[in-house]
Image 1 (tube, rainbow, N blue to C red):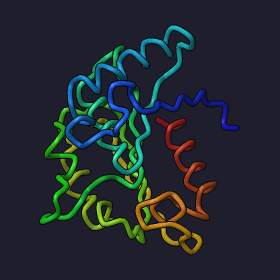
Image 2 (cartoon, rainbow, N blue to C red):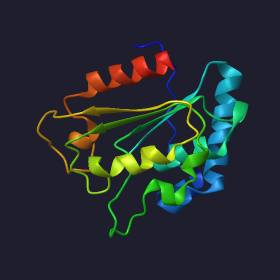
Image 3 (cartoon, helix red, strand yellow):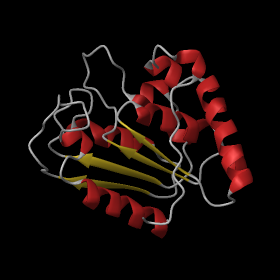
Length: 179
């Protein structure tokens, strides 16, 4: 509805069993997306923005950190960012990806009431602070939403902005257009 061409990238054929944080942050993962970016640019020469949600933020940050210039994205949006607390078995993005090398405008969107154990709102600022080469970085924090009908880390919860979808999408669209 906003006039954007949206491309959703599925599971790589060589990882049908799923992606781990290690495979999402690998150079090969970024190269897979480089091929997608090149294909899109052949079809439609418009700015390309990556959007990652939850563990998908590892993949999006990895691509933005590794691919520069015409081979990379023009911007990055990370929603319900993967920032698990210390002491869990899951490492935060900045231990997997050199986020300090991200040099594109970056938007973070997060629900203050996200109940997912790997995406607590309070753990987001240390990641944002590490993006010291992004020409612009911003956080849009929302609160509330409808009562969850799924587990806390699934889409039908505060993690997936249940009941706030139109507001969050509108905020992202406006930010991307302005940047």
